[in-house]
Image 1 (cartoon, rainbow, N blue to C red):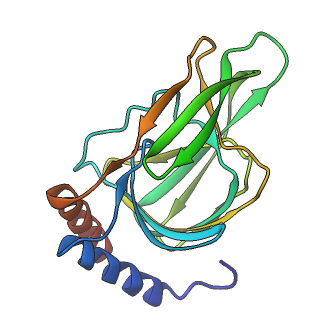
Image 2 (cartoon, rainbow, N blue to C red; image 1 turned 90 degrees about the vertical axis):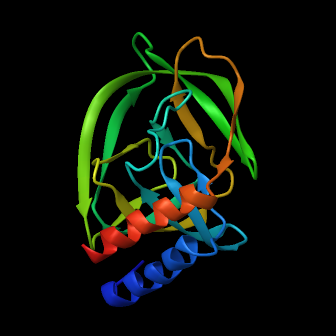
Length: 202
C-alpha cells in the first residue's frame, strides 16, 4: 500500500466481503494465531485477505508460541479496532530460552519441525496501530500480534519472498508436530462476519 488510503473505498470493499460471509458465506479458516482469515484473492506469491479478531470465538492456544516470523512482506490496513505488534529481541548467544521451529504450511494445516537454532528471548519494542492506519511487517521480522478484547479487522496484502523461512518460537525441548487448519463456516462464520460489520459501523 502506497500513498494515502481511500478509507471509504476500503471499508466499502470489506463490508461487501463481510456481508457475503454473514449470508451464504465465503471460504474462511481459523488461523492458529487467533484470528479468522477470509482469503479474497491469490495470484502466485501474492495474496489479499481479511483478518478478523473477535472475542465471540474461543481464544487461540498456539502449540509453540504466538511469536513468529513469515516469509512474506505484509502490508495491513486497520479497518477498525487497534492492532499491536510486540517485537522481541532474540539473541543467538547466551543461555538459550527457546528453539526456532520451521513451519511448512499447506491447505489443511501446518507442519512444525524443531531446528538446530536456539535463541535467548528478551522483551523488545512494541507498536500500536488504530483504525485507518497502514503498517508493514517485513519478511523475517519476529513479532507477536496483540488485539484488545473488543476486536479488530485488517485488510492484509502479502507478497512472498522466496527462499525465506516461516519460523515460530517454541520450547527448547519441543517435538515436531502438525497443526490442522480448521474451516470457519456456518454459524461461526456468520458470527464473525456480523461482529466485524458491527465494528465497521461503530
